[in-house]
Amino acid sequence: MNLTATGQHIVIDLHFWPTPNGYKVLMFLEESGIEHRIVPVNIGSGEQFRPEFLAISPNNRMPAIVDHAPADGGAPLSVFESGAILLYLAEKTGQFIPAGLRQRVQTLEWLFWQVGGLGPMAGQNHHFVQYAPEPIAYAIRRYVDETSRLYGVLNKHLADRDFIAGGQYGIADMASYPWTVPHKRQQMNLDDFPHLKRWHETIRDRSATVRAYLRGVQVSDKPVVDEVSSKLLFGQNADTVGKTQGV
Image 1 (cartoon, rainbow, N blue to C red):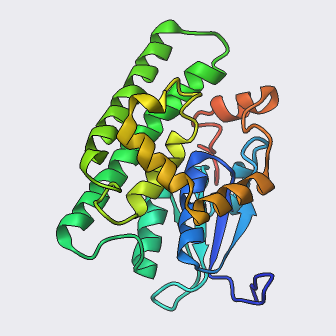
Image 2: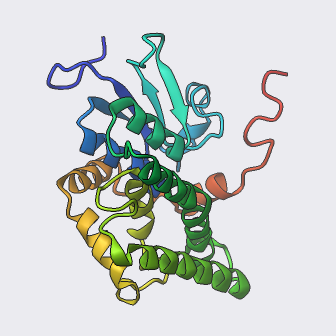
Image 3: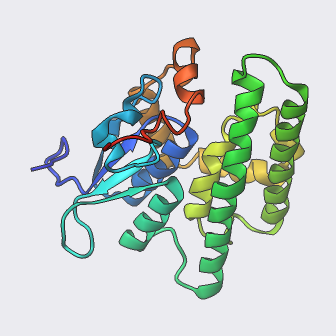
């Protein structure tokens, strides 16, 4: 039987490492109050390639969850990809996603904007600014400029609203916020984006956000990428992820 330290039944296992995508889901769990536990997946040492993790996250990326109490009453259900997890948890709990058609559509638009835009572009920014073995001026400018453009898009959108889908905090905000936390490393100045800055600081100061980031540091306070892990994290191809598994 899976129990928390307080004797409550664990509903969600969160396979996690303290990265922006990992924090998205931990923020939701802290906000919602659903009973959960963190299962660390040290991506710097290759734990994302373990067979037991690949069974729930075939893209060898965290986060992933296992729901031990799915709505259909069946066997535990795994979900991978952070955007899909946020939507799954929102629908499971009835929290942080609007019931009304128009706000729900807006929430989904901006959730997909983050997973298809802000996350990948900021991630490439991080790579070429921080981790590439040699500086490539074109790549740095390309991804710093695109990160700036996306910050500008969100800043403009937030000019007349408190949160991304309007007046209520939701999964679109949880998806986007962790990607603005490392704004200095992205060569972004929040003072250039005053509406985004106000939104960022509002979410930063939420008690659930504070708890999530404290828990993340407890999992690991070391850099995700170092000399040892960089080849593992950035040198993957079809063979790395098991093109021939099962043969």
